[in-house]
Image 1: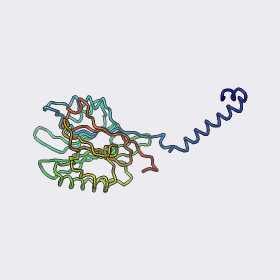
Image 2: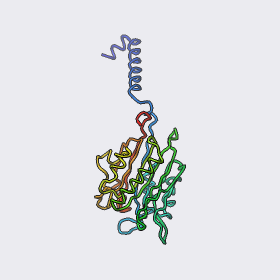
Image 3: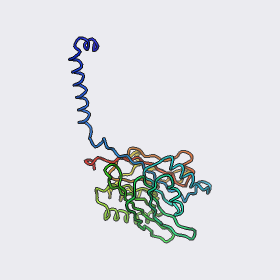
Image 4: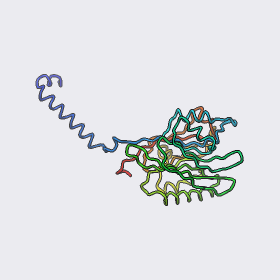
Length: 276
């Protein structure tokens, strides 16, 4: 019928068809936020690498390096990384890195590290230590990313083992963020919180208004420890100013034998200005 109509009234038909297409395009534009054309996606990895020691006390640093390289995330938060390892592990991944020394001993030292696709402008390491035998820290790095060079604060943390220590350290983190960043500043806070009781929910989500990627996507924190039979929910990716479109545990072989923790990956999308 349409074909017959087009043959009988070709000019009128194609004019009508053209107007309909333009109307549809106009409606799609009206229904979309124009800023969504400039969506910025960031892939985050957080991983406690246990000093490069995996299942059965097997050295795994080379495998960690190759599998992170294969995954190719934009931002990488590493905990329990030796000072002699962070440059080696960043080789051929991203040239921009920062390291925060926490524990010092005769054979060396270890701490937190951030590897970034984007240039790191500034870094600082905040001491969260409460016991001399359990050195902890918060590594803070600032980057510029995206076409509009937005400022993003990256915070990599490793908290203590006791609930009492965690609460004190979380309070210090909240105070630091409130005194150093504005409420509008973009931030990603990732790492090993050792938070098997959910102590971080109140200060970070209810207090600071952050969101957590796995909790947002799956309505529960990720079980990440021990890697061979994950039961405890220790590792997190908190954020502000983003949407979490995807979050998952890297459970497949060989990831689960590379450390005593399971690595977490999260995909974050920058919110539009009028959503923040």
